[in-house]
Length: 470
Ligand SMILES: Cc1cc2nc3c(=O)[nH]c(=O)nc-3n(C[C@H](O)[C@H](O)[C@H](O)COP(=O)(O)O)c2cc1C
Image (cartoon, rainbow, N blue to C red):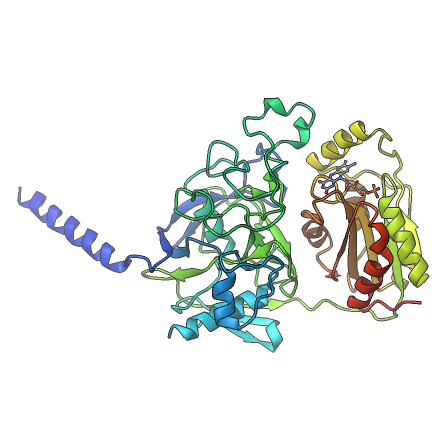
């Protein structure tokens, strides 16, 4: 009996001290209680990428903002609003990772908190004080843990999210690709595509109380993009933060123009820390209770740059629109231009190519190319302008073959894409992952053939990229 009373007293005390350890979250934040989970996706998850290796991760407790950072808050703190859609309650987008980090620090200072980051060498070096009480970005692991809310399935909800649940490219819910001509088999049918951001909190939150964790805008995470390494089995990785150096930073959750497959909890998107996109913003995090201690230093890997000034245009086109854009670039610049041809070309029938293209993307196949570029010739170019049609929200797989066949160290890739409404989709992320040693310039997306404004659009875009013209 005595023992029981003692245990009860101990339990009450332990519970109290635990409650004391983690105070209630600040306004508009939720407490994400620490724990252990499987990060990444199982090998049988449909549309997974091979960079989603499952491994066991433990994260400490943290507070996460219920909403993505709004334009109102961003403007109050920075005096600017770089977003491509405007409205106080819309999420801020078109912000670089570096700007997101500076924003966290500025907001911390405004509220008398200790900034989490020191930005050095113009952003080449970042020192993160993990015990600082200031605002910060989630790590990739924290983001996925919070999004999953204990689930192991592709999404936090058993039912695949549709346009009534999430702001995304609603025409293309998860698994539409292989069921395009028989979508009645899908539980979640194609819905509306809004083509823009919506006010934060427009839909129901996930079980952790987080709004728009999928869709609306992708959300910058702290981590450099890199391999998770081999599966750690039963060993747990504690509070990971990505690789110490790299060339791309991770963003998660998909945005207003992403397909269902790219909203998955395990899907990893990546971009240069100095790049911006109309569908990428951020969500804030704060330490909770006994936070992780120590400092972390990350370095931007120096991308070497050859500067002999020669530019090559390489493109793949199925129905001629990309070819037309490439011709316009060639007309304005006189650059060497190469069309990629396949050993076994795709079918000329639209219905068949839709199927062949999704099959090749689904299996991450690398179709053989007939076109070969001589190694000596390749070495002469420092800028490679790469053109392709947007296929199933990404690059056609012949472009993946091309990217893996040549050494892109020292080169700058300037992408252009012809599309039917999806602009780049996740194609720039796909290029960024397949050519990690290349700098990526500003892209040009062209609606189908580009219409009468094409010459002007191409001219302005080349100028922005500082590409020398004829
Ligand atoms: C297999 C296939 C998949 C496509 N997927 C998309 C897509 O996901 N998003 C989009 O906006 N357009 C999509 N389109 C439309 C093409 O991007 C568009 O027609 C483009 O202009 C074609 O360029 P091309 O003539 O150089 O082949 C797709 C077309 C095909 C044939």
